Image (cartoon, rainbow, N blue to C red; front, side, top):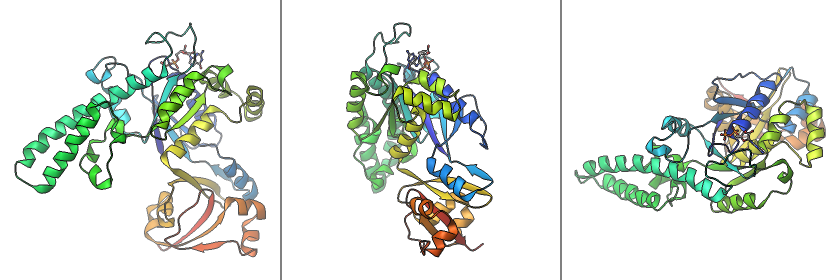
Length: 363
Ligand code: GDP
């Protein structure tokens, strides 16, 4: 499943958020996952559409898709040089699909700020710089070996060397790898380095309870940073999330209404993560289970089928599909078929968010 790494300076609210996430995961009824590791939490993706389909179909089980969160502590100023817990966090970051960068946007004299005061721009750059510095090490190592290889005069190697050299300058100027202007072909020169600053980022602004609905000047600052590369920003209050995680569904709705927010921060966080990564959800329904699946936006039907099982992709014949809205409107699979709304789609069909799918395949 989708893996998100939570990073940020000490005392910004990472553990509080992570605990809330873990509780949300642990409390979810019928959820077939458990905590794998104290630093990894698996959270079901909240989706009203799944709930509705489950009601309509009357399946035995309801299976949401899930997101994994990894609490990556130890990324502090100087971490790239081995300060703090040193480099242990690096291997964790390499494995994530998305970095959730928690930024402190609340003032509280009881909670010490490691840099003295609240200043999101400075804080974001401290973390970013550590990632860039670490990447510079990887890039420099790669350059050394490429220089040796290039002595053979191989054209491709020389080209790679030039690209990696440019990338090094880019990083040296304080820029993240993901802002390096490179197409897929160019990326091949450094793709296998799995650079940390190449990962997509979602900014999670931890605000005080009072600023939840309107935000504050610090959130605006983070928005400005995020806008550089069209990154997603979510505003949440870690303390509130911790409280929400303890409530049942009904209490939760009442509490959220009181706060004047539509949904819990966790839900918004997960939705934003999907958006940042260009992911969508499709559904399968049946008497046994109603289930949500995650695919990349733009995936064709066979690839989507492959998420369920590789046999489905290999033996793909066609998909029978209808949009969630149509299914809900008509109220049953039979009604969908009777109305002639069940579409037969082939291998070039591009799966849409909310599609209800049934795959036909050869084994
Ligand atoms: P971490 O070091 O980033 O993991 O930060 P923690 O989650 O341990 O939080 C550090 C301290 O800040 C704890 O005492 C939390 O209770 C407090 N804290 C976390 N989130 C909030 C918040 O939204 N508002 C306030 N006022 N305090 C918070």
